[in-house]
Every structure is written in structure tokens, then in C-alpha cells.
Image 1 (cartoon, rainbow, N blue to C red):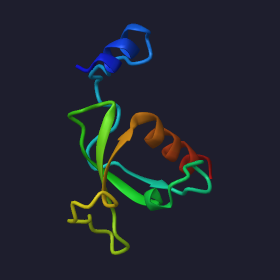
Image 2 (image 1 turned 180 degrees about the vertical axis):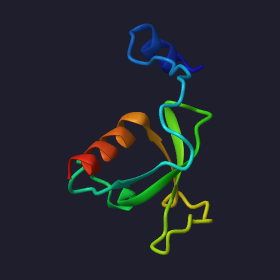
Image 3 (image 1 turned 120 degrees about the vertical axis):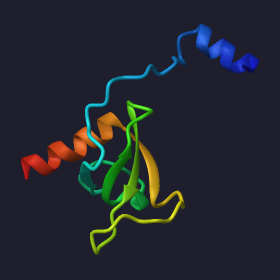
Length: 97
């Protein structure tokens, strides 16, 4: 580990993220709308599906195309890791509509 990382960790700024039991299942779909979810990146907008929960609280997600199939591309715009709070917020907004 570099000296700067050691310094920040000793000051309490950086903490190792512990594995958590997944609260979402593989196959769960959620929709992000950058206007509603307060996310400034337009490339995150759209429907996503969780494909891997091994690194929970981070979930590997793949973009769902307009025809309902999952994108096969490995490009960063089509495959992302989302933190559980982002997914939870997207599902709550959908539920409240």
C-alpha cells in the first residue's frame, strides 16, 4: 500500500468494504432515470439487471436493451458495478410512482 493510502486509512478516511449478504437477487431489474435519481451521468440512464452478487454490497449489472435482452458488450457503458444504495433508491422511486 502506498504512503498516502496508509495516511488516509490511519486518519479514518478510507475503510475496507466488508462483504455483506446480498439483499438483491441475480436477475433483479431496476431503472435509473438521471433526472429523478439525482445522478449526473446520462450514460447510467436506462434499465439494468443484476448478474453477479459475489462482491456485495457492489452488484455487477448489465444494461437491458430496448428489445428486453441483456447487452453482450463488455464496454463500460453496458456493464457497471452499482452500490446497493443506488439500486435501492431506483427501486423505491419505481415503487412510489
